[in-house]
Length: 325
Image: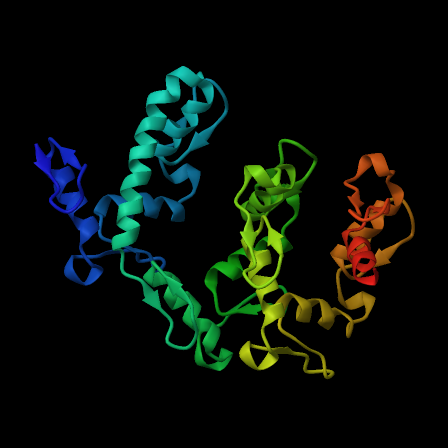
C-alpha cells in the first residue's frame, strides 16, 4: 500500500494514484502545470486537463455517456455515475454517501493547507490564482486591458466569460438551451440564474443564510449580501459608478445600468410589455412588479407585517411601512 505522509487517511494500491495525490500537497511553482491553449485554465493533473478540454467541444465531437433509464446525456463519465444515483433507492446510495463524506473531509484538510492569493489593492482573497487574475481587472481602466466587445450592441467587458453570457441575450429561447425550474414555470437561458431561482422555493432552514455582521440583514443569496455590504461603506471607500450624462452616482453597477436607460427613448431600448394590458416599461423589474396587479393574493407570495395586519404583494411596500412606523 502507498500511504500519504501528509494527510492521515489516503492509501492506495496504485503507484500512479499515489503520484497524482502527492501533487495536492505541492505548490503550482513546484510541479509541471498542464495548460489549456483555448483559455487560461491550468492544472497539476493531466487527467483534469483532458476533462477540461471537453468544455470547448460540442456534443457531436466527443463520446457521450447516456443513461439507459432516461434521456440524460453527458460528456463526462463521472457525470453519468453521479446521475445514475437518481434512479437508485436510499439503501443503494448509502455507501456512496459514506465515500462522499470521506472525500469532504479530505478537501477540508486540503483547504486548510492551500495557498491564499491576496489582492494588494483591496481585501479580496481567493484560493484560486485564476480568480485573482480576474479580480485584478477591477482595478484597471478599460484602456489598460483587452476589452471584449459585442458585435450586436454596445456592450463591452474586461471578462471573456461575461461576453459569452451577454451574447445569449441576443438569442431567442429556441436557439439556446433553456434551464427550467421543476416546481414552477420559470425558465432561463442562464444556468446560474436557475440556481439562484431555486432558492425561492426553499426555506431558510434548508439553505445557507448569509448574514451581515453590522446589521440584522440576512439573505439566501451571497451576491445580495455583497451588494448590501456597500450600504455600510462611505462613497470614498468604494468604487463609484458615474453617469456621463448627468450627476448621478452610485455604488452599484446594476443601478447605473438601470439609470442609463432613463436617458434613452423607448425606440432605443427593449421595451417590456404586459400581455394583459397596455402597460409598457424600459425596466424588466418594473414589469415583474406590474404583473402582480393582475394576480390575486392567493396566487402570489404575500409579505406580512409582524406588528400589524398589513399585507402586500410588494416587498418594497412592506419595507416602506416598516420605516414609516
